[in-house]
Image 1 (cartoon, rainbow, N blue to C red):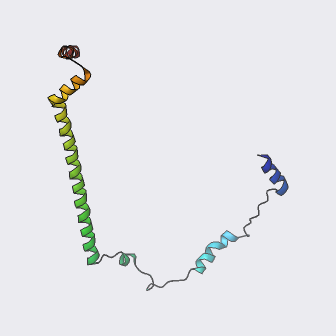
Image 2 (cartoon, helix red, strand yellow):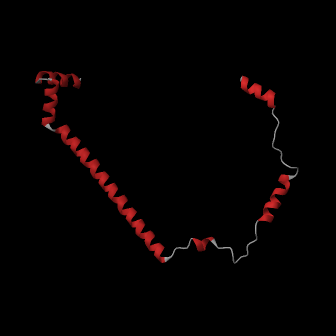
Image 3 (tube, rainbow, N blue to C red):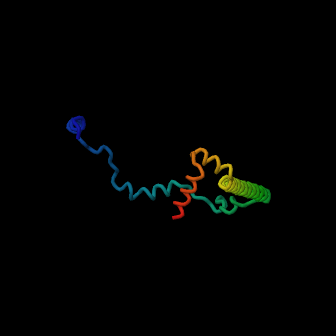
Length: 123
């Protein structure tokens, strides 16, 4: 405890200022239930009636489902096209002679060094 907390506990103490009346929780349920008004069967609405789909709502829901399906299909198709384009571009770049020529020029390798690297790699 810090000095401030010790000072406050000496000065004020720790009494519990909140008390529950005797028998409060034993009577609480009956008091709450008596406060709720009774409903007749005519006043109660069945849940199935509130969730009932009218033909118009059913039509709009089917249109929305079709739109979502078309958008999902188009997204998957476009994604597959992007992946195919990237893989074909990588394959073309890997096989291209101009790419190999540029890489060897950049690394300043001549034919003898390339042959020696290939010979060492085969071992």
